[in-house]
Amino acid sequence: MATFKEFGLSPEVMKAVSKMGFEEATPIQAATIPLSLQNRDVIGQAQTGTGKTAAFGIPLVEKIDMNHDAVQAIIVAPTRELAIQVSEELYKIGSTKRVRVLPIYGGQDIERQIRALKKHPHIIVGTPGRIIDHIQRRTLRLQNVHTVVLDEADEMLNMGFVEDIEAILSHVPTERQTLLFSATMPEPIRRIAERFMNNPELVRVKAKEMTVPNIQQYYIEIQEKKKFDTLTRLLDIQSPELAIVFGRTKRRVDELAEALNLRGYTAEGIHGDLSQAKRLSVLRKFKEGSIDILVATDVAARGLDISGVTHVYNFDIPQDPESYVHRIGRTGRAGKTGMAITFVTPREIGQLHHIEKTTKRKMERMKPPTLDEALEGQQRAAVEKLLATIEHNNLSFYKRAAEELLEEHDSVSLVAACIKMLTKEPDMTPVQLTEEPPLMKKEKKRQVQTRQRRSETRGRGAKTRTKR
Ligand code: ADP
Ligand code: MG
Image (cartoon, rainbow, N blue to C red):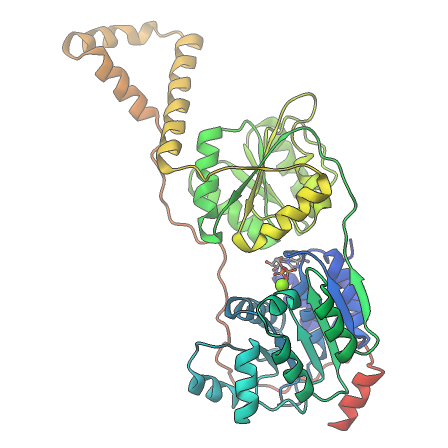
C-alpha cells in the first residue's frame, strides 16, 4: 500500500486528500497516479469501489492551471448519478486549490447549464448526450482540453453510447491525455482505446486469491442513509460481546464512534491520525471490555492482535479482497466462531462479487432487521439481565416490597413492568454521518494562486500547454 506522499503532489492537493480522510492509496490509485502525472495515456481496469475516481481525479486536479480560465479537462460518465458523484469527488479533491468543477447531464435545465458554463469551469463532468448537445450549441468549447477521461466505459458501451463517445473525442485536440476506466474490457472498448488513445498503459488490478477463516459471513444490501439505523438494530439484536465496526475513512470512523455514543453504545474509534499512545489506550479499554465497540479504519486495525471479537461489521465495504480478509480475520479467533456482516450499497454489488470470487466463499444475504426485531432483541437482553440478577444477587432486602406489591397486582403485570423498565428505549436520536460540501461553492474573490509545478510535464501534454 502506498501513501499519497510518494506521488509528489502539491500541498493544496495533499491537504484536500487528507481532509477527505484517505490514509493510503488503493492499488489502482498507486498504479495509475504516477503514470497519469507523467501524461501517459492509461487504461485502468478494476472493480467498482476500488477508488478509480480519485485515481484519475488526483492527477487531473494537480494539472489544472488556475491561471487559465478554460475547460481543461472533460470526464464522460454514463449516467446522471455517476456524473454527479464524480463531480462531487473532484470538487473535494480540488477544494483547496479552488478548481471549478461543473456536472452537466440530461434532464437538467439547459439554460441553467449554459449560465454555469459561462462561469469558466476548469473541469466538466457530463453524460455523453448532453455534452454533445452543448458542443453543437457552441456553449462548450473543447479546444483547450488537455485531458479526457472515459469513466465506467463498459457501462457506456452497454447503454449504447459508443458513437457519442467517438463524436466527443473527435472534438478534443489530439494533443491530449486520454484515460479510460472500466470494470471489464470488452472488445468494443479495446477498439476505442486503440483508435483514440496514444500507446496506453494498461493497469489491471487483480487481487490474489485468498482464503478466509471459517466464520459466518453475511451481507446486507442497503442504501447509504439507512446504514446507521441498521447497524444499531443489529447491535441490539446480536448484542455482541466485542465488535469491530470498519469505516472507510478517518472522518467516517470519528463520526460513527460519536454517533454510536449518542445512541447509548460505548464505542471508540481508532485511525492513523491518533497518536500511538492514544491508540494503545483505546485498545486496552477494548480488550478489558470497558468499551464494547471499536470503530476502525483498515490501516489502524492492521496487525492488531485482539482476541475475543465476536462480530465484525463492515459499515463500508472494503476496497479490495485483501482488506476484507484482514478485517474479518479479527473475529473467530482462538476457536471461537465469529460473524461478519458487510453492508453493500446497490452500486457496490460488483465489488461484493469480486470479494466472493477471490475468497471463493459466498456471503449469505441477510435482510436488514426490522424495528420490531430490534425491540425484541432489546427485550431479550432485558430478560437476561433480570435472570442474571436473580442468579447473582442477594435479593432478600427487596423481597418484602415484592410481596407487598403482589398483594395488589398480578405477577405478570409486575414482571412485565420490570422488563419494560429494563428495556432500552428505542433511541431515535437523529444522526448525520457525513456532511457533503455543496457542489460548487459561490466563488469568493478569487485569488490567483501561484504554485509550484511539482511534476514537470513532458511529452504530448507539454506541447498542449505551450500551444495555449
Ligand atoms: P470506483 O470508481 O472504482 O467504483 P470510487 O472512486 O467511487 O470507486 O470510490 C469508492 C469509494 O472509496 C468512494 O467513497 C471514495 O471516496 C472512497 N475512496 C477512494 N479512494 C480512497 C482511499 N484511498 N482511501 C479511502 N477511501 C477511498
Ligand atoms: Mg467509478
